[in-house]
Image (cartoon, rainbow, N blue to C red):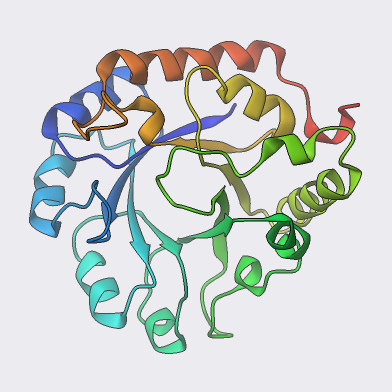
Length: 240
């Protein structure tokens, strides 16, 4: 079954909606340039409202050791890392890591399966990555990373994704699909990539133009779309 992560949680009422919808992960963004940025104190209050079975994900961009240490004492289950990860910062990580790969063009896709970040951070003794999250170039921008390039006529891109997924499966690493997902296209994303987890943020927000937090209706529609697709899911490796 495809698991569901709702990212960019900013309000306590959203935690209640996640509980009722039965999602698997709740993401909190700790990045000052993001409109979904929350303080650690605020995140702690929201976490108290979440069911225990929903895993809490701290989303960071090029974190330093101090930020990693602070987040490690809040009650998060997973650290999702975008951007760079220094050797010093990696030594402070005590949580399972989801490594985000942001794709901006075909060159990024070509390098995807060989990216060292998939295997480990800057430090060779870092804990194994639990999941690889493939996102668009601009995190939280509401756009996909160019799915049309993975259609049947784009054999090279398809083969790159397949190689990555096979490699991750062999090492028991999850494949997380993010970037521009919503209730209208998540079934297509599952069909194309057969991810272990789908990750949505702007696609379930009340107003994409003026940030107003999550929409309960859109969140519920997204969850229904994922669950419905499970009935007809086609493995990526056998698509024609």
